[in-house]
Image 1 (cartoon, rainbow, N blue to C red):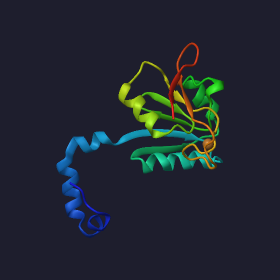
Image 2 (cartoon, helix red, strand yellow):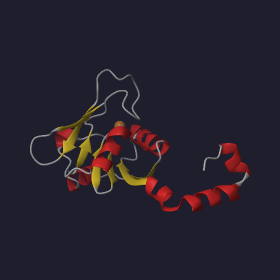
Image 3 (cartoon, protein in one colour):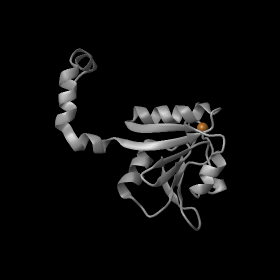
Image 4 (spheres, helix red, strand yellow):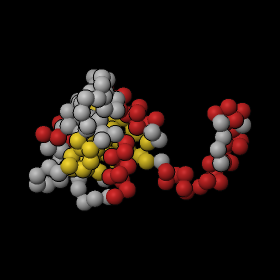
Length: 150
Ligand SMILES: [Cu+2]
């Protein structure tokens, strides 16, 4: 059941019925996550907004002790980005594009998570122009392996 924005505004009853009818399928489609960021970080918020626009339900938690969050979730220093996102028991570090996040959540590999280290220009939530493909690494024990390139 698809409604235009105008229809949603004009007819809230139809909208509520539509959600009720689509039931668990609709609820499952909503991916929930928690994003930890420093209160000063603007690009972190931009990434949270990008995820929300892609249909993720993200709780943004401001913290001045991000290092502790990264440590608790086993994010190695080399793979650290500016913020840390937790979804479904996985840690997603930095400005990772949703294609890779969806791939992670669908394939459910036995790793702790994935990371786009640093703050590459042009990545989701980051300003500037993309100058090279983004390499997303696995967060796992042993040598870092490439999870995806996009
Ligand atoms: Cu950032």
